[in-house]
Amino acid sequence: MKKPHNHLLIIFGASGDLTYRKLIPSVFDLYNQNLLPDNFGILGLGRTEMSDSDFKLKMSQAIDKYSSTKIKSAESKEKFLDYLFYYAFNTKEQKEYAGLKEKIFSLNQSCQTDNNYIFYLATPPSMYSIIPKYLALEGLNDESDGFKRLIVEKPFGFDLKTAQQLNHELRTEFHEEQIYRIDHYLGKETVQNLLVTRFSNGVFEPLWNRNYIHHVEITSTEDFGVGTRGGYYEGSGALRDMVQNHLLLLASLVAMEPPTLINADSIRNEIVKVLQSLRPIPEDKVEEFVIRGQYIASKIKGKQIKGYREEEGVDPHSRTETFVAMKFFIDNWRWAGVPFYIRTGKYLPTKVTEIVIHFQSTPHHIFSEDKAIRDQQNQLVIRIQPDEGLLLKFGMKVPGAGFNVQDVNMDFHYSSLNDTYLPSAYERLLLDSMLGDPTPYWRIDAVEAAWKFVTPFIIA
Ligand code: BG6
Image 1 (cartoon, rainbow, N blue to C red):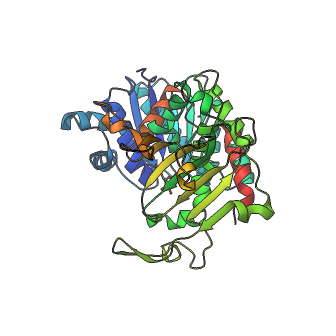
Image 2: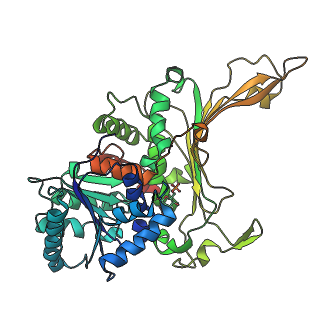
Image 3: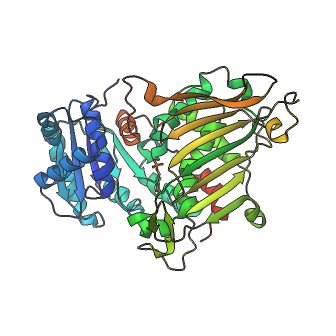
């Protein structure tokens, strides 16, 4: 594997949960696989006062808890912790950015990171337009002496208008090529494998269209509630939190045309074409196409759970949806008339993300008079998580007299591959941003096309 160029990773929001649970453990996993550059450093920024050694201690615990590769030795972890530095800093204050610049420059010197910087915004979205502006005022967007990249976490906006506004603000200071809009679904191995399943197997190609596919179902359910994230979720709901980004992305990967090349632009061009072909759901037809729900207090597996409206940070009269089921169409030649169904929600019976392709049943039925059996369809189940894999359901003769048909499975599990390490989504995404490959990141036009589709039926 290629190694990234020397650089400094600068994390805004370094005292927060994302840094603790995902970012540092994932960078450690890259280190363990020898995928970090020769010269490297991480500068954590946050309002909390902390010394370098406090930060290292905290991150050492994060690694113990959340990294997916084994800690080779206490010595190797200590060596990794040498990359870490911390600077207490108020991101909202423009006057503090001169000090930050000095800190960055001095680390750049001592770590010999060749003026290459990646800024990771693990902050509340309200900071997304402020930080880039202040960085730019200090010239920290200028790529004449080394790369300067900006990674932004979802949500990218709140609806179409705010997304356009945010994109405008980001692009006033940084070029589109410098902006990496992260969606962790794009970093999942099984999501990337969708491209390989579709475009490396001749057997699927002739079948992957309206002539042979009856409908497509995309499900992503969770068996837990909003937990401590009520404050955020209340302003978001399932449509913004899951549908506008992760699930429309899955739909795009299922529906896209083959890219001409495997590179960022070719793939992203095909994704955006799907999103732009989504048939708008007219306001007076929303009820026909979209169902929203909210979890209420109940007993699950013997455990009493709170209703959504009783969660911390949630309005007791909230109308925010924790469940969405919807149907939509993609108006293009390949998919004309094929319904796509999306379903997502919190506190549902199980945690699973999967895509089911339902093929047309046979045109003429010879084995049974029974309608249920006659209507049986072959299904291809693409399990994104857990138990990542692929399953094909098909009819087989029940041994014995007559011609009775029964559904059986051909099932592949990633776990059955020996010695195969499935990197975490953040590990893949961080590595790609370090390598300067924006393929698994959202491009501006796709973000806006997804918002354009979803915005009319989001209830404020
Ligand atoms: C996040 C959402 O983007 O994705 C969460 O904000 C959700 O609400 C999570 O739980 C689901 O991710 P995954 O990888 O567990 O399916």
